[in-house]
Image 1 (tube, rainbow, N blue to C red):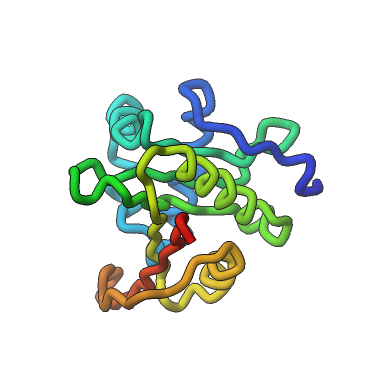
Image 2: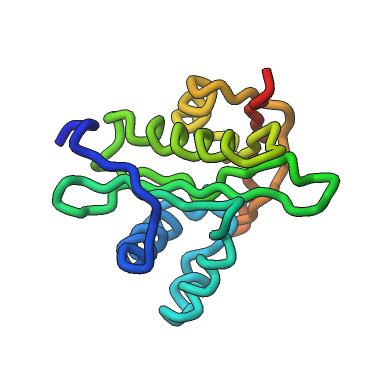
Length: 176
């Protein structure tokens, strides 16, 4: 499989089941990388899971999948914007994940490109934020290649099995 054989498309109701399966895999395999836990998400009914997902979709938010030609979902990323009048200029990357068997093929870059391109179409959005577990050096390198810079560290933002994990806070200014 080549990166060109992968299509980046929004997650739709028909592709949501594949997205949910990939999300559960991400949460199980990397509990230190996501705020949600596998136990919590796996405990949601399909309807509740769809409702939770839908809460992050709309005119100022979107979630994409990286699909192989055979329809296999290989990766995902989402973006949402703050809505308050003083914070509506901020967009946030969430749920970034590429399955291990699909890594090294620029899929992560293409997903981030889709999210940033979407952010650029939203009136008034000036910056895109993300948080990445501080020890995830490969993800941080990806975000740096995409133009994100670290502006802080949030200590022990996640505690998994008694271990605290810091997150690097990163930003991409769209008006530079």
